[in-house]
Amino acid sequence: MKIRDINSFKKKALHWAATFDACCCFDSNNYPDRYGRFDFLIAAGIDDDLERRSPGNAFESLKSFFNDKKTWMFGLMGYDLKNEVEQLHSDNADNLGFPELFFFVPKYLLSVKDNEATLIIGGPQIFDAIYNQQVRYGESGPLNIESRIPKDTYIKTVEELQQHILRGDIYEVNFCQEFFAKNARIDPLFVLQKLNEISPTPFSGFFKIRDQYILSASPERFLCKRDRLLISQPIKGTAKRGLDPVEDELIKAGLKQDAKEQAENVMIVDLVRNDLTRSAIKGSVKVEELFGIYGFPQVYQMISTISAKLEPEIHFVDAIRNAFPMGSMTGAPKIKAMELIEQFEFSKRGAYSGAFGYISPEGDFDFNVIIRSILYNASNGYLSFQVGGAITYAANAASEYDECMLKASAMIRALEN
Image (cartoon, rainbow, N blue to C red; front, side, top):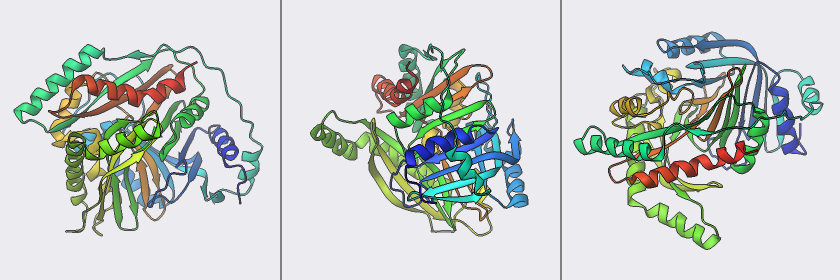
């Protein structure tokens, strides 16, 4: 079916999908993507599901779930599945309570590509339901957004992490901080619409698990699979957009040539190459693009693309596990960086810096990185978003704090009023 007013259709489809216990939406916001299969994808309703609240056998359970169903499924993998991948633990406070892993087989699924809508699961009555759906937003209460870490504490913590770098424990670590609101009352769809207007990104989306919501303006792909090809596109390197075209071009060129940002990026590229090697045909891991500069409304980002051919004997779920969690959100060496993250961060990451995405019946998949995302638990009124950055020995702690505030700016604006 040809969609004449795509923005209206997306709003109605989201409101329709959100009436179900679970739904998942991806919106590319028309960014060019040589690996993307859809411009807009929305799944709604639970035909079957898999939920794991604690790490242990989550990836094996997902493998069995897929092998049994061999159908479309959509799901969330929380950052703390790292405790299953490695001998790690998570003891920080978790006020959101997202599952460590949640996948569901949808009752209804439709895609949009080049303004052409296709029903994948479900009958044509879905279109009638969507077009008849009323777009109404509920009221939101006032929010008191607090920072979990005062600026001086953040700077002191970064300096302590740099001592670990000086001692040779790590080369780089992604250190994150939380902003939160208690007793929050929001309309998730209204906030999502505002966030997407302020910061449209290629891996944005909406994930609902009953009374828990992820409102995502993610610019980053964790991992996707196309036939036997695996693709990861880590982000490391950020610069604020300019106020006018001349300044903007100078900033873009400056980021491209910034030795510090290149060093951060290449460390993570090497880490991702190593992760993919565990699942790849020997000699097939390639850096498709190094230090690519991509523009988004608030920032320029340095993005590299790494590919590999999946070893035929390795199940694709094992390939996900071998690369999880993503190197852009951990550091190098990966295990020691994750240990220090647990030691120095003030909040459990949970769904943040995990991934959500889809798996097709053929075993292809695509997962984003849950960053630039607002997480909300409607049952206890807790709202949270986290931001972070790569800490190297050359990093300036005050500048890193400013970068965190830049990354947080779209989410703060979306939650205003």
